Image 1 (cartoon, rainbow, N blue to C red):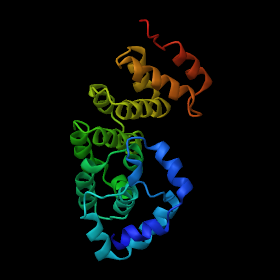
Image 2: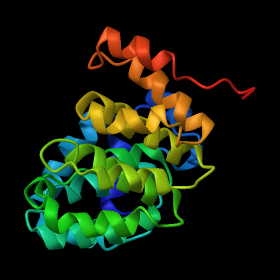
Image 3: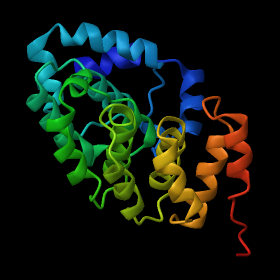
Image 4: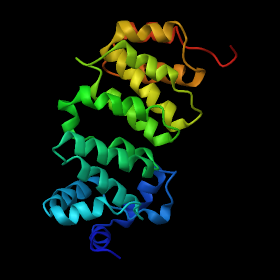
Length: 230
């Protein structure tokens, strides 16, 4: 066992392991140690100070344990050079096998380089790998729904054809957030019923549960729900 793995086991909480296993059903329960996220983030901060050890760990893919993958993602967030961060994420994506690791790796440096980052998203969103697609959609939602928004992004979401639950759930999450932030451009997709049935209705559900959508908008969205019979 590596020193990092030993440290993770020292931080383990057996009760939390059971809870975490239920949240990430795509992960083998035997690979879950049971470390809470705040403790992992604190350890990532400590480990990042040891540059040699951190770099060695980031090169040791694939990892054995679920928490090692979370730790990997948290360490990537400390990278201050855009190109280095983007390439490190690109290398890591094929090894992600669950939504939790996928959704918690957000290098802050991307905020300052949205133009340079966009080609990576365009590449990842066409990937055959479930969590690479999910990550790309998540990045569009995180960094491109304000000043950098473009209607082209909505078309990218529409072009995704997948039967994967974790892909389509992220598509619905993106569109619900887009409705909150870019209503005029996004509502047309719902009105014209351009999505598959499940994602269409899940988008409406998530929107009507959002505090960022007005009551009037929610009422209108409910009229656009499609019944399975149709």
